[in-house]
Length: 232
Image (cartoon, rainbow, N blue to C red; front, side, top):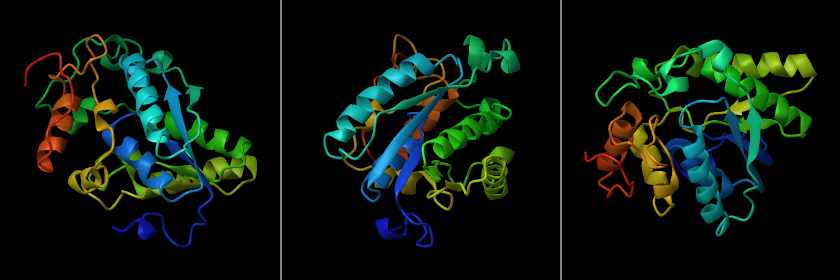
């Protein structure tokens, strides 16, 4: 996919907000859009999940390095969306019994997670005069809150609530992981973060998301620049 076709031609490209987790897909998406849009604003939604402190520290460093070549990347916007009242003693909050490498994708599904992330992010966009929110969802994402109908429907509902036209851009929703990874060549991906059980700010090397990260680098034949706490 060429950069000119990353965002559909019918969508006017102005300031774009990017919902970023710090993982590989959203890290690459930030850089992709920074090459095209005049201004890119990274949004991070804090929910009180176990890995967020380590993820945020990595994300801040990644953004610092990215801005050296893309000064149009704005400051990181932090939004608060506490989840403890919903998820209680779930592994994502406690860090206990975290899904290990080899578990199915369904093991890391957080019910309604995209509702929580997107609703507040879209409202922030409206309040700041931004009409496009980009997400790094892939075509292989199997979850019900990652479908085109979900994204379009939620954008429409939030827009209706505030009398605005809002769009959720999904530039990678027809792409596989290896295609997205190749778009990240040359980026400081060592500072992306994909772990759900960090150990002293390092990737644990043994959880479901670390295994997915290792497979992503292997799929494109690149050395994995990640420092893992456990051998793999």
